[in-house]
Image 1 (cartoon, rainbow, N blue to C red):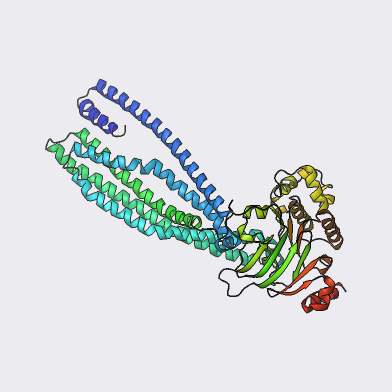
Image 2 (image 1 turned 90 degrees about the horizontal axis):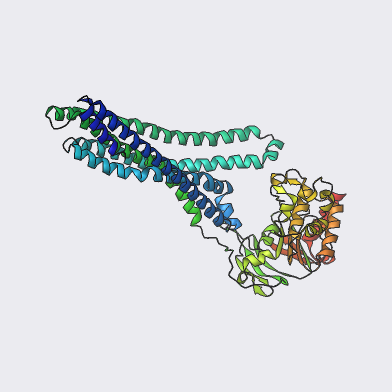
Length: 545
């Protein structure tokens, strides 16, 4: 339709305006109006479907990224960084969505306009079309140079966005620490520096873009001047009519506009390429620990045995854990204690395979841990992390994280054991009470009790508590330990603790010192045989005094 319109205009000029035929002008004008309306309707349809396709495309990419990163081990999350993963899943995907939309709206249309415009222009006057042989190579060279310079610039912009997001995330999550140490001014300077870096990178990109379009317009205007100059000679010679010159200019505009479309694509493509590279980088990472349906099934975890286990973090020089040998059986409570940095949390992270051991073996029911179906193993472990993490929603939805189809009776039982029942019942909406983001509307002790209840609701074979009683007062701590002993007596319970009072009645106490076992036994045995344990007990006794 767009190719047809200049011909109609040429006929109006040549056969209507010059001859003064008003009826012909009205007839052709009405035809032009109909064609223009049809072209507009088709453009609306194209815009609707291209938008729908690009939005759906970006939705699928985000879903794939999220599905892939959920398979990452804890180590891979640490290597990539949370802020970078968020940026890649949102900002980088948006860049790809934008270029995909432009491809559907412009890139597919531009070649047709270029080829069709050239055919129609040559058909009007082949000799006059030689003007394009000069302007088109110049325009293509400009576009190529802009694209070559743009790719590294846009990659830098995305990296600067990562850096800004990192500072912003740290400030928002660590706002209490920042205020406690009066570091607001320092953080503002830090944010300002990253903000300036991002602004500087964006400014360089904008300079490239803003310098590109004036040059393109200049080439376009010179092309039109050339067409008018040489076209007037063709009219004087009788080889062309005035209306054909006007139509020719329209076809030249189509050709040049198609090249401008290409230039717009070259401006946005480098940024999308940088974003795509960052997304591909994530998707090309093979999770070191795969959660799949392979591996042997297990009916119940009866025992856990560590046999000469050692572990070293990736790129670390020394092992965090070395030569660990111990076991814990069904119904027993294993307590783990030791100084800061002794490897307590690292040890328990090996059981649900948040990390894989570097050496030795972890045996479940006498078989190597990695031979079992990982998803099933984790499904039989109730894990309470060191930091109490709650999700926005209500208490009920948070408890159902532990067991999706949990009944109200099961929630009440878990809350009773974890000593959360008392404060839940004081709330107006009880289990339907709102939980703000991060559980900020609850105290530290309340959050800990809710996370403990979330683990207990699973009725698992193994319960792991990573220093999960630290925010509880001594009375609540004692009640909780008593309830655990009575209500989950058949399960294996592994408790990482700082307070000796929390673990004195454990069946086994494992004392860690610099990643090695300094002692293993009951409280009285260790008081006699383990100097490290005795020092811990004495230091806490002195603090109590």
